[in-house]
Length: 358
Image (cartoon, one colour):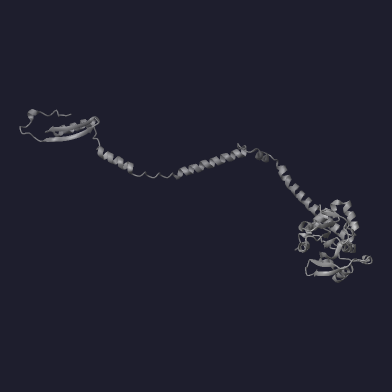
Protein backbone atom coordinates (compact mmCIF):
# COMPACT_ATOMS: atom_id res chain seq x y z
CA UNK A 1 0.00 0.00 0.00
CA UNK A 2 1.32 3.37 -0.96
CA UNK A 3 0.15 6.64 0.48
CA UNK A 4 0.83 9.55 -1.72
CA UNK A 5 0.80 13.10 -0.68
CA UNK A 6 -1.76 15.28 -2.41
CA UNK A 7 0.78 17.99 -2.86
CA UNK A 8 2.84 15.78 -5.08
CA UNK A 9 2.83 16.64 -8.78
CA UNK A 10 4.90 14.94 -11.38
CA UNK A 11 4.84 18.05 -13.48
CA UNK A 12 6.63 19.91 -10.77
CA UNK A 13 9.36 17.30 -10.55
CA UNK A 14 12.74 18.41 -11.45
CA UNK A 15 14.19 16.91 -14.53
CA UNK A 16 16.91 15.49 -12.41
CA UNK A 17 15.67 12.50 -10.47
CA UNK A 18 16.12 12.91 -6.70
CA UNK A 19 16.77 10.26 -4.11
CA UNK A 20 13.84 9.13 -1.99
CA UNK A 21 13.44 11.01 1.25
CA UNK A 22 11.32 8.35 3.05
CA UNK A 23 11.73 4.62 2.94
CA UNK A 24 10.17 3.25 6.10
CA UNK A 25 7.93 0.35 7.16
CA UNK A 26 5.29 1.05 9.84
CA UNK A 27 3.28 -1.64 11.64
CA UNK A 28 -0.46 -1.29 12.04
CA UNK A 29 -3.28 -3.46 13.30
CA UNK A 30 -4.02 -4.52 9.72
CA UNK A 31 -0.50 -5.27 8.75
CA UNK A 32 2.48 -3.26 7.76
CA UNK A 33 2.54 -0.08 5.68
CA UNK A 34 5.54 0.68 3.60
CA UNK A 35 6.12 4.35 3.22
CA UNK A 36 8.10 5.12 0.13
CA UNK A 37 8.03 8.44 -1.61
CA UNK A 38 10.27 10.71 -3.50
CA UNK A 39 10.71 14.34 -2.68
CA UNK A 40 8.10 14.26 0.06
CA UNK A 41 7.74 17.50 1.84
CA UNK A 42 8.12 17.88 5.53
CA UNK A 43 4.53 19.00 6.05
CA UNK A 44 3.20 16.20 3.94
CA UNK A 45 5.16 13.68 5.94
CA UNK A 46 3.86 15.05 9.23
CA UNK A 47 0.30 14.84 7.99
CA UNK A 48 0.81 11.26 6.96
CA UNK A 49 2.16 10.30 10.37
CA UNK A 50 -0.72 12.10 12.03
CA UNK A 51 -3.19 10.16 9.94
CA UNK A 52 -1.58 6.91 10.93
CA UNK A 53 -1.81 7.83 14.60
CA UNK A 54 -5.47 8.69 14.15
CA UNK A 55 -6.10 5.27 12.68
CA UNK A 56 -4.43 3.66 15.74
CA UNK A 57 -1.49 2.34 13.81
CA UNK A 58 1.02 2.50 16.66
CA UNK A 59 4.36 0.91 15.80
CA UNK A 60 4.30 -2.82 16.61
CA UNK A 61 7.05 -3.89 18.96
CA UNK A 62 9.76 -6.14 17.68
CA UNK A 63 8.51 -9.72 18.01
CA UNK A 64 11.98 -11.16 18.43
CA UNK A 65 12.61 -8.89 21.37
CA UNK A 66 9.20 -9.83 22.88
CA UNK A 67 9.97 -13.55 22.56
CA UNK A 68 13.28 -13.05 24.29
CA UNK A 69 11.64 -11.15 27.12
CA UNK A 70 8.97 -13.89 27.52
CA UNK A 71 11.58 -16.64 27.68
CA UNK A 72 13.54 -14.67 30.25
CA UNK A 73 10.36 -14.23 32.31
CA UNK A 74 9.70 -18.00 32.22
CA UNK A 75 13.26 -18.95 33.14
CA UNK A 76 13.52 -16.40 35.93
CA UNK A 77 12.87 -17.83 39.41
CA UNK A 78 9.57 -17.08 41.05
CA UNK A 79 9.70 -14.19 43.41
CA UNK A 80 9.16 -15.06 47.09
CA UNK A 81 5.68 -14.62 48.40
CA UNK A 82 5.45 -11.48 50.47
CA UNK A 83 4.89 -11.99 54.16
CA UNK A 84 1.52 -11.31 55.62
CA UNK A 85 1.14 -8.04 57.25
CA UNK A 86 0.92 -7.83 61.00
CA UNK A 87 -2.45 -6.27 60.67
CA UNK A 88 -3.82 -9.61 59.49
CA UNK A 89 -2.42 -11.41 62.53
CA UNK A 90 -3.83 -8.80 64.78
CA UNK A 91 -7.14 -9.26 63.12
CA UNK A 92 -6.88 -13.02 63.59
CA UNK A 93 -6.06 -12.62 67.25
CA UNK A 94 -9.01 -10.35 67.65
CA UNK A 95 -11.24 -12.89 65.91
CA UNK A 96 -9.87 -15.69 68.13
CA UNK A 97 -10.47 -13.62 71.21
CA UNK A 98 -13.96 -12.89 70.00
CA UNK A 99 -14.49 -16.61 69.39
CA UNK A 100 -13.22 -17.41 72.87
CA UNK A 101 -15.55 -14.90 74.37
CA UNK A 102 -18.40 -16.37 72.37
CA UNK A 103 -17.54 -19.90 73.48
CA UNK A 104 -17.25 -18.75 77.07
CA UNK A 105 -20.61 -17.07 76.81
CA UNK A 106 -22.07 -20.27 75.36
CA UNK A 107 -20.61 -22.39 78.15
CA UNK A 108 -21.83 -20.03 80.79
CA UNK A 109 -25.27 -19.77 79.34
CA UNK A 110 -25.95 -23.24 77.94
CA UNK A 111 -24.14 -26.58 77.79
CA UNK A 112 -22.14 -27.09 74.57
CA UNK A 113 -23.30 -29.74 72.15
CA UNK A 114 -21.73 -33.21 72.41
CA UNK A 115 -21.32 -33.18 76.18
CA UNK A 116 -21.32 -36.71 77.61
CA UNK A 117 -24.24 -37.79 79.71
CA UNK A 118 -21.97 -38.68 82.61
CA UNK A 119 -20.48 -35.22 82.63
CA UNK A 120 -23.93 -33.70 82.48
CA UNK A 121 -24.99 -35.78 85.46
CA UNK A 122 -21.87 -34.74 87.36
CA UNK A 123 -22.55 -31.07 86.60
CA UNK A 124 -26.14 -31.45 87.72
CA UNK A 125 -25.13 -32.85 91.14
CA UNK A 126 -26.33 -30.41 93.81
CA UNK A 127 -23.66 -28.54 95.70
CA UNK A 128 -25.11 -29.81 98.96
CA UNK A 129 -24.21 -33.41 98.03
CA UNK A 130 -20.61 -32.51 97.18
CA UNK A 131 -20.19 -30.54 100.36
CA UNK A 132 -21.76 -33.27 102.47
CA UNK A 133 -19.35 -35.94 101.14
CA UNK A 134 -16.43 -34.39 103.05
CA UNK A 135 -18.03 -34.82 106.50
CA UNK A 136 -19.01 -38.38 105.52
CA UNK A 137 -15.39 -39.20 104.64
CA UNK A 138 -14.17 -37.77 107.92
CA UNK A 139 -16.81 -39.72 109.77
CA UNK A 140 -15.83 -42.99 108.04
CA UNK A 141 -12.15 -42.34 108.75
CA UNK A 142 -12.87 -41.64 112.40
CA UNK A 143 -14.94 -44.78 112.66
CA UNK A 144 -12.17 -46.90 111.10
CA UNK A 145 -9.62 -45.52 113.57
CA UNK A 146 -11.93 -46.21 116.49
CA UNK A 147 -12.52 -49.78 115.31
CA UNK A 148 -8.78 -50.30 114.92
CA UNK A 149 -8.14 -49.05 118.44
CA UNK A 150 -10.92 -51.23 119.79
CA UNK A 151 -9.47 -54.35 118.14
CA UNK A 152 -5.98 -53.48 119.43
CA UNK A 153 -7.36 -53.15 122.95
CA UNK A 154 -9.13 -56.48 122.60
CA UNK A 155 -5.91 -58.13 121.42
CA UNK A 156 -4.07 -56.88 124.49
CA UNK A 157 -6.85 -58.24 126.73
CA UNK A 158 -6.82 -61.70 125.09
CA UNK A 159 -3.04 -61.80 125.26
CA UNK A 160 -3.14 -61.08 128.97
CA UNK A 161 -5.76 -63.77 129.56
CA UNK A 162 -3.61 -66.37 127.75
CA UNK A 163 -0.61 -65.62 129.97
CA UNK A 164 -2.56 -65.59 133.24
CA UNK A 165 -4.86 -68.60 132.79
CA UNK A 166 -4.48 -72.32 132.22
CA UNK A 167 -4.62 -73.84 128.77
CA UNK A 168 -7.99 -75.43 129.57
CA UNK A 169 -9.51 -72.04 130.46
CA UNK A 170 -8.10 -70.47 127.29
CA UNK A 171 -9.54 -73.26 125.17
CA UNK A 172 -13.00 -72.69 126.63
CA UNK A 173 -12.74 -68.96 125.97
CA UNK A 174 -12.06 -69.50 122.28
CA UNK A 175 -14.77 -72.14 121.97
CA UNK A 176 -17.33 -69.69 123.38
CA UNK A 177 -16.08 -66.79 121.27
CA UNK A 178 -14.66 -68.11 117.97
CA UNK A 179 -13.86 -64.59 116.73
CA UNK A 180 -11.57 -63.94 119.67
CA UNK A 181 -8.78 -66.12 118.29
CA UNK A 182 -8.97 -64.30 114.94
CA UNK A 183 -8.59 -60.98 116.75
CA UNK A 184 -5.62 -62.32 118.67
CA UNK A 185 -3.96 -63.76 115.57
CA UNK A 186 -4.31 -60.49 113.60
CA UNK A 187 -2.84 -58.52 116.49
CA UNK A 188 0.00 -61.00 116.88
CA UNK A 189 0.78 -60.84 113.15
CA UNK A 190 0.93 -57.05 113.34
CA UNK A 191 3.45 -57.31 116.18
CA UNK A 192 5.58 -59.83 114.27
CA UNK A 193 5.91 -57.40 111.35
CA UNK A 194 7.71 -54.96 113.66
CA UNK A 195 10.31 -57.52 114.75
CA UNK A 196 13.79 -57.48 113.21
CA UNK A 197 13.53 -61.27 112.68
CA UNK A 198 11.06 -64.07 113.27
CA UNK A 199 12.50 -66.94 115.35
CA UNK A 200 10.34 -69.49 113.52
CA UNK A 201 12.50 -69.00 110.43
CA UNK A 202 15.56 -70.30 112.30
CA UNK A 203 13.60 -73.39 113.42
CA UNK A 204 12.49 -74.06 109.85
CA UNK A 205 16.12 -73.86 108.71
CA UNK A 206 17.03 -76.38 111.43
CA UNK A 207 14.35 -78.85 110.29
CA UNK A 208 15.53 -78.58 106.68
CA UNK A 209 18.86 -80.07 107.77
CA UNK A 210 17.16 -83.11 109.29
CA UNK A 211 15.98 -86.20 107.39
CA UNK A 212 12.58 -85.88 105.75
CA UNK A 213 11.45 -88.98 107.66
CA UNK A 214 11.61 -87.14 110.99
CA UNK A 215 8.20 -86.27 112.40
CA UNK A 216 7.61 -82.83 113.91
CA UNK A 217 5.12 -81.72 116.58
CA UNK A 218 4.40 -77.97 116.51
CA UNK A 219 2.87 -76.89 119.86
CA UNK A 220 1.04 -73.58 119.34
CA UNK A 221 1.40 -73.57 115.55
CA UNK A 222 -0.60 -70.40 114.78
CA UNK A 223 -0.71 -70.05 110.98
CA UNK A 224 1.12 -73.39 110.40
CA UNK A 225 4.18 -71.77 108.87
CA UNK A 226 6.41 -74.72 109.78
CA UNK A 227 4.05 -77.28 108.21
CA UNK A 228 3.83 -75.18 105.04
CA UNK A 229 7.61 -74.73 104.78
CA UNK A 230 9.10 -78.25 105.22
CA UNK A 231 8.72 -81.66 103.63
CA UNK A 232 8.52 -83.46 106.96
CA UNK A 233 5.32 -84.71 108.52
CA UNK A 234 4.17 -81.99 110.91
CA UNK A 235 1.45 -82.25 113.58
CA UNK A 236 0.14 -78.71 114.15
CA UNK A 237 -1.63 -78.09 117.48
CA UNK A 238 -3.39 -74.96 118.72
CA UNK A 239 -6.41 -73.75 120.69
CA UNK A 240 -8.32 -72.63 117.57
CA UNK A 241 -7.98 -73.25 113.81
CA UNK A 242 -6.37 -70.62 111.63
CA UNK A 243 -5.75 -73.00 108.72
CA UNK A 244 -7.03 -76.47 107.83
CA UNK A 245 -3.82 -78.15 109.04
CA UNK A 246 -4.49 -77.24 112.68
CA UNK A 247 -5.54 -79.88 115.18
CA UNK A 248 -7.56 -78.06 117.85
CA UNK A 249 -6.71 -79.34 121.32
CA UNK A 250 -5.32 -78.48 124.72
CA UNK A 251 -1.53 -78.61 124.32
CA UNK A 252 -1.30 -80.36 127.69
CA UNK A 253 -3.07 -83.33 126.06
CA UNK A 254 -2.25 -83.80 122.39
CA UNK A 255 -3.63 -86.78 120.39
CA UNK A 256 -0.26 -88.50 119.72
CA UNK A 257 1.21 -91.78 120.78
CA UNK A 258 4.20 -92.06 123.11
CA UNK A 259 7.62 -91.76 121.51
CA UNK A 260 6.18 -90.95 118.03
CA UNK A 261 7.89 -87.60 117.33
CA UNK A 262 11.50 -86.69 116.54
CA UNK A 263 11.28 -82.90 116.94
CA UNK A 264 9.01 -80.93 119.31
CA UNK A 265 8.70 -77.14 118.86
CA UNK A 266 7.53 -74.35 121.18
CA UNK A 267 7.97 -71.10 119.27
CA UNK A 268 6.52 -68.17 121.26
CA UNK A 269 3.86 -70.53 122.61
CA UNK A 270 4.83 -71.21 126.25
CA UNK A 271 1.79 -69.27 127.45
CA UNK A 272 -0.33 -69.95 130.52
CA UNK A 273 0.14 -70.99 134.09
CA UNK A 274 0.59 -74.73 133.46
CA UNK A 275 3.85 -74.71 131.45
CA UNK A 276 5.02 -77.90 133.20
CA UNK A 277 2.10 -79.78 131.60
CA UNK A 278 3.20 -78.64 128.11
CA UNK A 279 6.81 -79.72 128.57
CA UNK A 280 5.98 -83.08 130.12
CA UNK A 281 3.62 -83.75 127.19
CA UNK A 282 6.49 -82.96 124.81
CA UNK A 283 8.66 -85.42 126.73
CA UNK A 284 5.99 -88.08 126.36
CA UNK A 285 5.62 -87.86 122.57
CA UNK A 286 9.36 -87.46 121.84
CA UNK A 287 11.52 -90.44 121.04
CA UNK A 288 14.60 -90.96 123.16
CA UNK A 289 17.25 -88.61 121.80
CA UNK A 290 14.56 -86.45 120.23
CA UNK A 291 15.05 -82.69 120.02
CA UNK A 292 13.07 -79.97 121.85
CA UNK A 293 13.29 -76.48 120.28
CA UNK A 294 12.23 -73.49 122.41
CA UNK A 295 12.14 -69.81 121.32
CA UNK A 296 10.71 -67.08 123.53
CA UNK A 297 10.79 -63.32 124.05
CA UNK A 298 13.96 -62.37 125.92
CA UNK A 299 12.15 -60.25 128.49
CA UNK A 300 10.22 -63.29 129.79
CA UNK A 301 13.33 -64.90 131.28
CA UNK A 302 14.11 -63.51 134.71
CA UNK A 303 16.15 -66.55 135.78
CA UNK A 304 17.71 -68.47 132.92
CA UNK A 305 19.57 -70.80 135.25
CA UNK A 306 16.34 -71.75 137.03
CA UNK A 307 14.67 -72.38 133.66
CA UNK A 308 17.48 -74.70 132.55
CA UNK A 309 17.38 -76.53 135.88
CA UNK A 310 13.67 -77.19 135.54
CA UNK A 311 14.08 -78.50 131.97
CA UNK A 312 16.80 -80.81 133.22
CA UNK A 313 14.45 -82.25 135.82
CA UNK A 314 11.90 -82.83 133.05
CA UNK A 315 14.32 -85.16 131.23
CA UNK A 316 15.96 -82.64 128.83
CA UNK A 317 19.62 -81.86 128.43
CA UNK A 318 20.62 -78.50 126.97
CA UNK A 319 22.51 -78.83 123.68
CA UNK A 320 22.50 -75.25 122.46
CA UNK A 321 21.71 -71.81 123.91
CA UNK A 322 21.47 -68.42 122.21
CA UNK A 323 20.86 -65.54 124.64
CA UNK A 324 22.82 -62.91 122.73
CA UNK A 325 19.81 -61.75 120.73
CA UNK A 326 18.20 -58.64 122.19
CA UNK A 327 14.67 -59.74 121.29
CA UNK A 328 14.48 -63.54 121.51
CA UNK A 329 16.24 -66.36 123.35
CA UNK A 330 16.58 -69.74 121.66
CA UNK A 331 17.30 -73.13 123.23
CA UNK A 332 17.85 -76.64 121.96
CA UNK A 333 17.36 -79.64 124.26
CA UNK A 334 17.73 -83.38 123.81
CA UNK A 335 15.49 -85.90 125.56
CA UNK A 336 17.58 -88.08 127.85
CA UNK A 337 14.94 -89.77 130.01
CA UNK A 338 11.22 -90.16 130.59
CA UNK A 339 9.44 -87.96 133.12
CA UNK A 340 8.36 -89.47 136.41
CA UNK A 341 4.99 -88.67 137.99
CA UNK A 342 6.66 -86.84 140.88
CA UNK A 343 8.28 -84.26 138.60
CA UNK A 344 4.96 -83.25 137.10
CA UNK A 345 4.00 -81.60 140.37
CA UNK A 346 6.86 -79.05 140.08
CA UNK A 347 6.23 -75.54 138.82
CA UNK A 348 7.71 -73.32 136.12
CA UNK A 349 6.89 -69.68 135.53
CA UNK A 350 7.92 -67.19 132.88
CA UNK A 351 7.09 -63.50 132.86
CA UNK A 352 4.04 -62.64 130.80
CA UNK A 353 4.68 -60.82 127.55
CA UNK A 354 2.58 -57.65 127.78
CA UNK A 355 2.22 -55.44 124.71
CA UNK A 356 2.21 -51.74 125.42
CA UNK A 357 -0.50 -49.48 124.11
CA UNK A 358 0.66 -47.55 121.04
